[in-house]
View (spheres, rainbow, N blue to C red):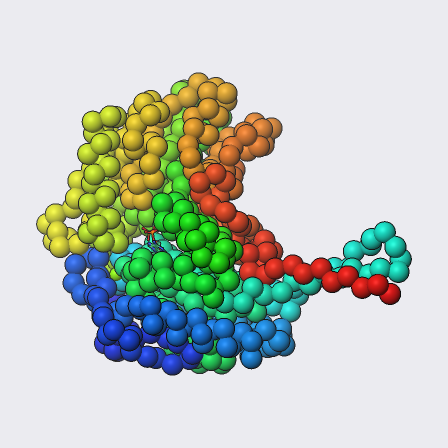
Length: 489
Ligand code: NAD
Ligand code: MG
């Protein structure tokens, strides 16, 4: 098995503190909680809880920095700092991926891929920092000039979940910083370690005091941010349920801007004419990647009648071959992130057994892994389109397999959901692929592939899967506001 580096161990022994105004500070109330290694249930590190006084201090520092240091900073200087941060993350790839693996449970090589994705993302947005332009608009008279400017929002709160802790933090930080905002990052309470490590690198990269703060804590800390009257925007990724609370908090406070990346229940659609070999290679990962803790998980599989048995049998065979173990041993799948998540997933499996047919899995893994939150990848077969497990996002390694006869029937099933994040279509008929892609109510459609991402390509949800588009040029709209300046010449 791989071993934890001395530098990672040293970081895990760090005193629980918050990162405010480029300093590590104790929380005012001194409250802490343990973050757990989900592979063995043991405490990994003590984490500080940011209370109201700490949130106020962070907001004040960010506001001051915005006014005095960040708003009018040379954009190419912002670009250079973001690029430097990317390079430092690259330098510390081993430490960051080890910390992510221990804290979240994911396989080490997947954590490495996550860190690389974070680096790529930062570099992409470093490139944008000095290219955020306004326009000149022709109006009724040649003697009137209208110029638009894209200005930063000011102080932004960035609240992220636990499934891709570092990547989610960087997805938000990189466009927010590129646009010239001051940020308060709040990682998920289950996985704060890599966000804290980022604090060290932010210092080293030379960001001015107050440009980035990192506040740990649970939903209460998040709620203090969303209700704060001096925060201009909250960028949130997490559950639809909490996303609605974020909007509510905005309405109850200063009507701060809100962008939301929320849950999903994405259809993975396989037509009779699909290249079945390619389907089989992809399907097991689309179904169980990150132990199913993925907002884009292809959790509803629809297979056209003629190929149902072949594709389902292929999936069962590939799923049986998946290795499950502690993340450090580089298995295919690691544990779920927490005991709470395990209980939640087991609850859904219980429902699934009552309403549909269990084909494979369904059990917690005992034996040498019994202290961790490991569960078998689980496949249900059903044509009960009202079953709870086909309606709700489970956020675990659980999929349903359903059949369909034709396109019309399929579209009905596909769009019969409150979510609309991702989807995939497998067919060799390009006309059909585009016809169906247009009909699907989701922010992403993958044709003959799954989980394809690039920093330049917008990502976000239809319906209750979110508001706004992260990534690409679209994310610049989330972290700037437009001003029109009229001049009578
Ligand atoms: P969650 O909504 O419980 O928590 C997300 C974050 O919000 C955490 O940092 C948490 O501390 C904070 N939070 C909790 N209550 C809050 C409140 N009242 N006010 C403000 N902040 C609060 O979600 P989770 O369980 O950590 O993550 C799983 C969910 O995230 C899934 O539903 C998944 O689909 C979604 N997700 C979506 C995307 C996406 O890009 N669309 C990506 C990853 C995860
Ligand atoms: Mg943890």
